[in-house]
Amino acid sequence: MGKLSLAVLVAFATLGCNGDKQPGTTDAPATDPDALDPDAVVGTDSSPVDASIDGVAAATTQTMTIGTAGGTLDVEGATVVIPAGALASGVSITLTKTTETAPFGSMASAVYLLSPAGQTFLAPVAFTLHLSAPPPNGYGIVWSKLGIATPTTINDFEFRPITLSGSDVSTTNTHFSKVFGAFLIFA
Image 1 (tube, rainbow, N blue to C red):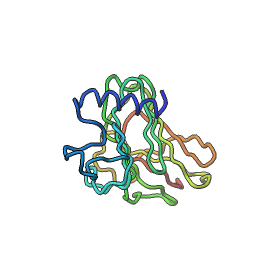
Image 2 (cartoon, one colour; image 1 turned 60 degrees about the horizontal axis):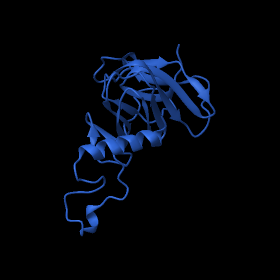
Image 3 (cartoon, rainbow, N blue to C red; image 1 turned 30 degrees about the vertical axis):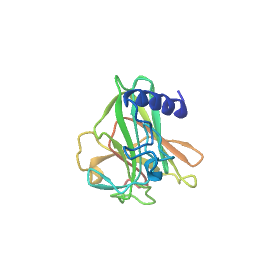
Image 4 (spheres, rainbow, N blue to C red; image 1 turned 120 degrees about the horizontal axis):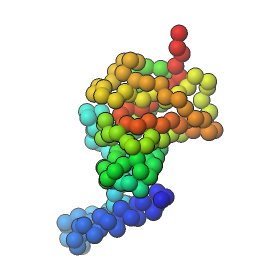
């Protein structure tokens, strides 16, 4: 199912659960021009936010409830694809591009949070970084290990095998945590 189809499906499901309240509206009177949000999309939020997730300032976030049919989340510079069958039931999934600096490596990308942290999947999910140019040899995706609450050192992360397609760098994993791309040299 495509991103648009999934968003439309989520919109209809959410509309059916909200009684008379329409997507993109508030409880303010209809005559109030600030009461309507013409850019509202039910089930997702990909606008810049001033909030934080686990104390980390968020630059761009998208959240969507994804179930057994799978789904895709996109934020500036990255995409997460959850395949059909990876989840046994609906889970609120969030992809956040943070303003956090990568804890190590050179030519590091932004740090992305995949939430809920520690979420495990029945099938691997794909994470793709969309770089501005093809990366050099030795560039990879670094994913924090399952069970590490606050990953800070290189031992808290794993260097994931990647697939290159032009300037896109992809990998898979079966859990959510912090992810970033970096050029690493192993001695």
